[in-house]
Length: 429
Image 1 (spheres, one colour):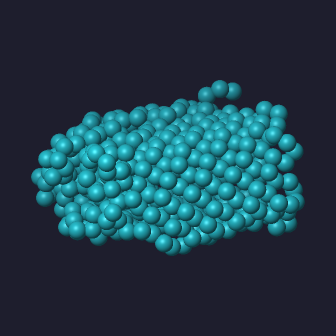
Image 2: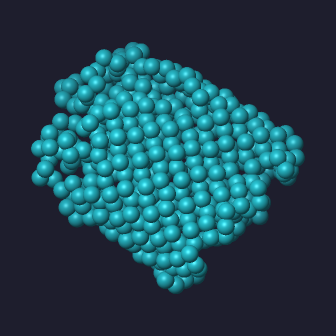
Image 3: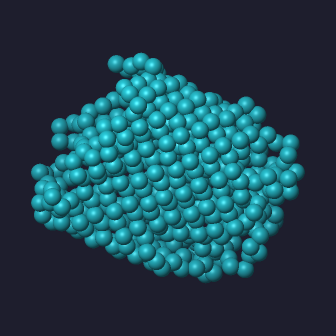
């Protein structure tokens, strides 16, 4: 991207968590994890979903009117054939798994939004000794970005030249833990974010994270540990001056962060399991005008099965990470969610839930006019749906979801409602 192109663009992003809120759909087939240790299973399903969305672009009416986009179809229908995978294979003392989906979105009116929708996780564990194990995992996602993730002044960039965001990561973990006693662990993860369009490539980044903990565990107590993490991230296409081009001798923008705290993990029978952590984080952006972050971070993940019919997942977190906003070095994110599955009978299950995501962006350049970007952002989402197992192989599903975005910039305040009907076929025996 040259200097003139930069001058013509007013960029705004909504952060990695917010992008996930925009482009990812709520779960259709329930939210509850399996209680207890996983058992061998091979589940492969072929799906076809039909979806109506009242605002496929994620843009406010004020923005659409201001930029003369009324001729574009804001609402649209899409069809998504996909393959759903859920495999877990124990191999003696080892195990491997594969989970996720491979699909493609086809739109009726906005055919430029036709794009692959991929979300895959692969991994495995190996038991080295009676108490020590190692694990490897990889994750890959690829999907269309929401047009509201970047604000530009040209319709061609905004609506027709849609961007594909790709995220990939690989990690390794090692832990030694007996039934009772000291349990050390160490982990490493490398993550990459890539975008297909030049406009979005200012947000391309690499990040490496190291995690070390030492804890104590026993069956009646669970595992209590103290941890420390170190993370280094780099934006590949912008420098510490906030300029979107290379300057000889000027290093790239990025962040260096440190965190320390305590974790607690425990399963109480098959009814209650979860983990919680609380700590403090120091995040130092490289950009010379960006703000540092010093503050508390936490996470909570809880699975509750109060009855044989109902399963509930609760999650809450606060973290400071690399931002997908071209004018920010980092974002402070808070996420709160509740997802539940209620089984009416052997054939019918109901799914419902809600989520709240807050973003606070630490800007790279503090002197830019506030009208050109968002510094605070909030997403809320609620959904409800059903799953009906017609027989052993054929499954019907439906879902209604409502999302609202509230930003400190009125051009990025909008709401949309989507409705999905689908059918799937179990493959194999």
